[in-house]
Length: 407
Ligand SMILES: Cc1cc2nc3c(=O)[nH]c(=O)nc-3n(C[C@H](O)[C@H](O)[C@H](O)COP(=O)(O)OP(=O)(O)OC[C@H]3O[C@@H](n4cnc5c(N)ncnc54)[C@H](O)[C@@H]3O)c2cc1C
Image (cartoon, rainbow, N blue to C red; front, top):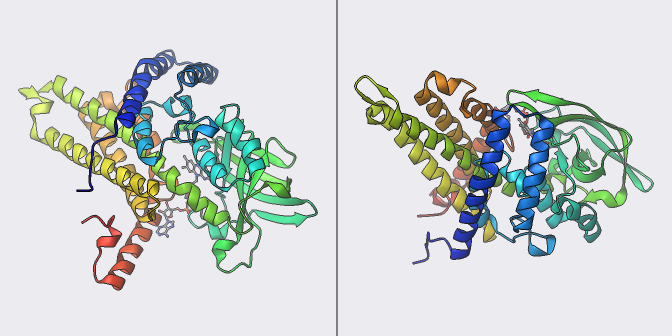
């Protein structure tokens, strides 16, 4: 029998370790900052202090191999680490596994030349700098990267970049950006039009015009104009025309890492929902005794359980070199929507308190809305999922292979 849901002891140990660190160190520090309404600088100071503690005990770069100062965990083990760290807001930053740096580290590890790795991956892995990823543009649909207008033109030993990007998370303060730009507008297929570049920051011609205010506040999502930004030729990341491929490679594990963190958030919301239901009394009984509320709890539990299985199975496929895009897309849509629904139910069960800023639920819900857009909007993933189901049915007369090929 090949299926074994038992966690290897070393992964269980890591899970417990991360859980304890988040519970004992990160969550209390975060609560204190919130209680005090601390300014951004105080949050940064606290994150830096917590990072030192995490680094000292070896809870650092869980996703990187040991030669890059990491814990060498694969995607399946990372699911547990992210789910624990994702229960807090700053947890992923504290262990240096935050978006977009984690995705950029994976990308550099896989696509970087030895020189690029030493120059850019090394300081990122050591926590000495931050980075951003600039692909989306305001003028064209981010869902279709073949439309990217930022142009890179060869001039002597340089590529010269001109264009307009936005929603580059982490742009302010980033030491470098991975920029996707069009090098070959007539390439066929159109997926071969783009290439990736590492841009040192700050640099002449790179204008961070603002960080975009969103419904979740100011999240350091940069809007940038690139005016004749000169990038040395050796800073092309991956081959010419491989920008799309690199983006897809980066987004596979990155999407799943988001799902893992969202599972942590959804679990917190469900725990709050149950706790409130057990303690709030109305119309002759506690809310936890009322069928309408029990249904919400049951639905949330089932959806979260499915979410966990989907994420673990997709992680297993990545880890074992199996095709994973269908499973990652399905997990991404399911988990993003599960998070939204569970938060909505948790607010409902808390009544006015849930809607107030006295609890974190409203903040979590505002942040969760982005989950249905980032790393591919729901509809784009759904279209991809349906296409696979239809194609596989046409090929085999069955749909099994498009559903994780499980049973
Ligand atoms: C919080 C946040 C952080 C982000 N961070 C980054 C980052 O670090 N770097 C970066 O480059 N980008 C980032 N993005 C941008 C994100 O990747 C894009 O928002 C996303 O790719 C969608 O592109 P768009 O916003 O241009 O929407 P559009 O492509 O214009 O799509 C709008 C809507 O159209 C619909 N749609 C699109 N295509 C289809 C289709 N084929 N079928 C049916 N419906 C469709 C969907 O409903 C979609 O939501 C971030 C976005 C957010 C909200």
